[in-house]
Length: 377
Image (spheres, helix red, strand yellow):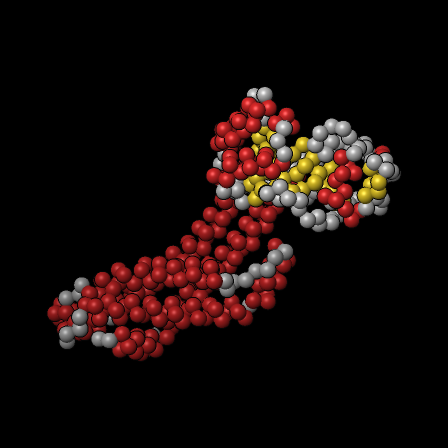
């Protein structure tokens, strides 16, 4: 029997059992909508939580390296030494800052707040980063070394930057000389790297930095152990673990719903096999192969899944504005049930439901003895 003939036969059989077909299709639609909804809720909640963790606790695997001023090497040479040590970990971000000695502003209101630390940012290669103005508290400019640094050339460092560099204020590189004139103490460099790895890489980094800085430390006449300071600047390992746990719970709920749906299909098909024993026995008696009998059961489930998934897509598209409004109210983000990644995962779930609901009933139908079935009926 050809696949086309099997599909036609399945359609005719389901047309005669509309209630069963409608109930199974509804089961698939509900399971699919719940699965897509849980996946989207998992994405939204975990994204918001991860963003909050990075904002408050720093990006995962953040480390701060502070070379000693006694090394007597310039920034580019220092960065070459650091790169040779850290590139093996393939860092996702590298931030470089030149920290000026603490300065005391000369004009109000900053002259009343005491010393402040100011930094200039560089890229991973040692070139000055383009300055992007940001928020600065107060309504006054900063006066240093007899020069007024305008508000547009200063900004507060972001929370993420403070985890990698230890400076509350960022200055436009063109005004860095004015800051340096306020003190005779040498500037310091801090290099922040992000590995993205939750497990502690501190010892690995420390050993590689020692090997990389050994020659420069020897030339400067200092011990390599004092050639740099390495600290881990992120935190919240328990909170990050909790975030992973939330994702696991959501996944468990989504796949659990599909599993229950597959079990529902299994029960329904076993009932079909029991009620239509005479049909399968007659088909086998007139020469139908086992593959055709098994295909009839499997095509019956495929038809339910196809119609159910089409109905799911229609409902998801119609309800998109309502879902998005809920996402804005609950998570301050857009929620979208129909995403390529979600549909691909749902496709795997469909295969799971097909195997769970169809393999055993199909095998059971092929094991019927035609003569025994005909004798009973």
